[in-house]
Length: 79
Image (cartoon, rainbow, N blue to C red; front, side):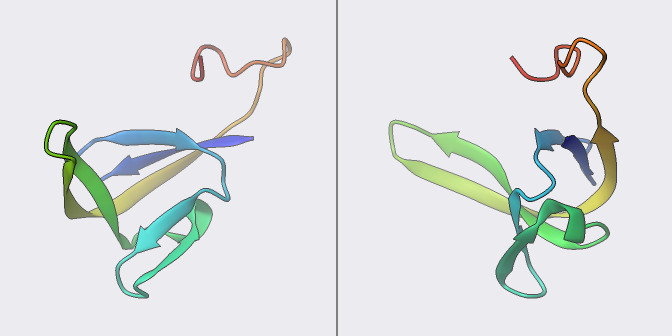
């Protein structure tokens, strides 16, 4: 299955339940399913020319479990 993570700024991420998310309080990666309600590090921007990225702390507000439909796909969630 897949999960849809929704962060406090409204940004969503679709990933596996085991996908590593950097949880701020532990200063460590944890599986996405264990990060609900926690502050996590999120990529805010990336500049390929400067090879630089900016990050911010966001609260993981919601986790929605996505199951494949009868055709075995996730209804266009993943290309």
